[in-house]
Structure formats: C-alpha cells, structure tokens
Image (tube, rainbow, N blue to C red; front, side):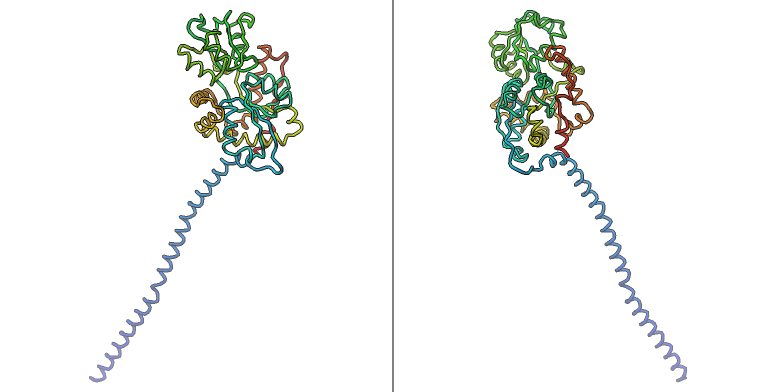
Length: 380
C-alpha cells in the first residue's frame, strides 16, 4: 500500500514539473510575435513614406520646371552694370515692362543701370536711336517698317495687339470705312494709326489721295477729334478710351480684327543695329530683364496696371481698357513662336502689308531684321 502511494506521488511530481516547464516555455516564446509586429509596422511606415516622398519630389520638379526661364534670366552677370538707354511708350506694353522692372529690381538683377525716357510713338524712338541717343525701344507694329529698313533690330516680341482703331462720331457722314472719301482724318504718320488707316482704305478701295490726311502727334489726334476739327481719328488704345469718355456718341469703324488672319500685329522691343553688332552681351542683359518683367506682368496684370499708372501718370482705367485689347505672351510663348517659325511669319506678313501701303519699296525677309537667337540664349 505504501509502495503504491509512493509510485502515485512520483507520477504527480513529474506532471507538476512538466506543467512548470511548459509555462516557462510559453513565457520565453512571447516576445517573438511582438518583434515580428514591430518589424511589420516599421516596414509599413517606410512603404507609406515612399509615396509621400515621391509626391514631394514631383512637386519640386514641377516648381523647378516652372521657374526655369526666370532662373536662367535672373542669373546675375559678372562685371559692372551696363549703362543702357531705354525708350518706351507710356502704356501697358512698353510702360508696363519698365514699370515692373523698376518696381521689382529686375534691371539690377540683369546687371543694368538704365536711363529711361518716355516717347509718344515708335518713329520718334527710332529717330533717337539713329541719332545715337537710344539703345533700346518699344514700338508698335505700325512702326516695324523702320526696322525692315535697317534702322533697328527686333530683339523680342512684346505682345499681340487688337487695339488700333478708326473712330468717328455722329454728324460726320461717316458710317463705315466706305464713307472715308473726302474726310479729314487725324493720324500720327508712321505709326500703328497710319497702319490701320491704310489697311482700311485698301479694304474700301479708296486711294489715300482721296482723303484729307492730317499728321498729328497721338495726343493731338485726341484733342482735334474732341474739338471737332477732324472727322475720323486713326489712333490706338488707351488713347481711344480718352475719346470715348469725352465723346459719348463716338463709334469705332474698324479695328485690327477685321484683318485677321491675313495679318497679325506683334508689338516689339528693338535695339540699335550698332549695339546688336558690337555689344550682344548688353542685348542679353536687356532681354534678361525683359523676361523677368514680362512673365511677372503676364501673371499680375492688375498690379502691372497700378505700377504703370504710377510711372506714366496715365489713368488706371484707360490702361485697364488696353489690357483687354492685348494678347499677352509669356516668355515661353515667345520662345515657342521663335523656334517654330511663327515670329518670322508675323513679320513677313507685316512686310507684305508695308509693300501694299508703300512704306517699303521692295520685300525684306523678316530674318534680315528680326533676331530670335539672342532671346533664346538668355533662357539656356
């Protein structure tokens, strides 16, 4: 009996020890799943971070791409600042570039110390350039014949224009361009005003000899029309707005859109042939400043209007009206037109127009007076 209980006691002890060992084994194995979970969590976190990093990288690439032109143009050139004499017309085109470059410090960024002068029209600036008094100037499409004659070199398009007009009023007997014969027409000769007038006369089959052309400066056209001294004003925006504000019954007979798509009307910046030939680095500096100011203007039209009004003294509302008759071009748009041949086509079209209006005696290829290479070089 005693022996039987001893055997049972031994079996009970063995069972208890097995239980203890099993319990110890469970406790040792528990950390393994915890380590696996931590590793999985770390891997998941790394996987989640990867798309975020990719998105950030893509955003950075996009931002870098959008800033390429500005960064290229903004690289400050070595050496002393170039002393450049720059002319402009007090509007949102020429004046707009100057106003933005002044306010944003783009002249200095491009290594330029500018001497700035306002002119009422393009031919006056080209005359100053021929006299050696001006290095760069903004001119409208109507004055491009002077560049075709070799008096200036087009270094960049500024924008495209639809704001040249023939304007009349009640009581003049003029209801359409077909009624222009014998009428007194005020026009600044050699400008976009004459351009729109000559195209209109051609369209109406009226000889220039059959109208009374009165050569006036741009402000004089406005004054003469308001005073009733002329029947028709051949003028452009924003001066056209001054007429419409003072003469409620003033009516537009025609504008540039009547001649689309046969002609386009690029506005431009020109340089003296001398500086293009002898100092292309100075031209590049000017174009650097233009690229910066042009792209800022295109993205901030209302601010540009305010800055231009401050610079020129022109009413902001008149300038604002002009922005609606302008097709603004970014520097990327200009470069695309330069590289695909569009720019030269625009100017070849103007040459054909100048032949028809007797501004040029013979055809001149646009490539002879339009330089697109210098513009492209500042974007590299």
